[in-house]
Image (tube, rainbow, N blue to C red):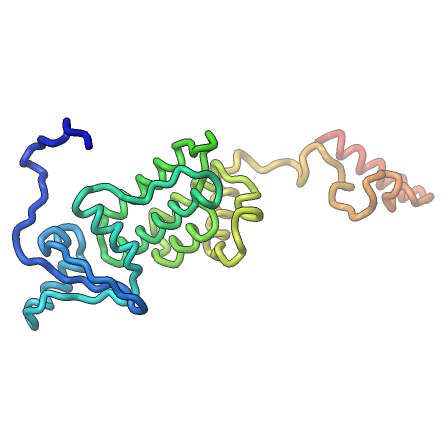
Amino acid sequence: MDITKLRTYKHGSLDLRGRALTVTVGSTKPVTFSVHEHLICRTSDYFKTAMKAYWETSNSGSIALKEEDPEVFEVYLHWLYFETLPVKNDNPGLEGNIEYVQLAKAYALGEFLQDVNFKDAVLDAILIKSRSAASDGLNWYPVGPAIRHIYEGTPESSAARRLLVDMYTYHGLGEWLTKWANKDDLPKQFLLDLAIEALTKRARPSASLAPKKGTCEYHEHLPDPNSCYVNCSGSKRGKAVHIASCDAQKIN
């Protein structure tokens, strides 16, 4: 414990007055949480609206979120009380990606609860993790299920979607899609967003399909140029085509 932080200013401290709410989260193995009404309604428009309706019809002060994950909701409550996100994982690779998955789920929950402050904090955490070296000294970015959870739990205009697309546009490698993700974790809309952004942000269109390479780049024959149908042809037309192909290669 850092005793230098024992003292703090009253301004900005938690307002723990008022009624306590009971929130039951999950359906298969539901978990019950208690939270101060004023605290959770301060930033969540969902709870603000829900509790207004509840107090008009009931004095129970309880609400159920059957479709949500108790572990993710606990992260949300931790943020409300301590303004920190207990998800840190410094491992590399897929093990470290677990943190990104937790943050992605947390962002989707924030979307459902209509809590802008929480969503912004989650995006900051994603950025901080991506800019911090893991235990292997490398920087790792969100892959696989982290992308799916963001796209499944957010609208088309989501800032979280835009962040993922920007990360892949400016820092991404092909293996992020082929090695580190299953196709089921790559929503069609994400791939479309990424393709559009990559084409838009490309410096300029190239003069040829494969810079510095001739037409054989797209042929299916053996690597030996002599196996090309053009070189196998004894006709003048074939030689002319091959000369044109070579000239194109020199130009590019």
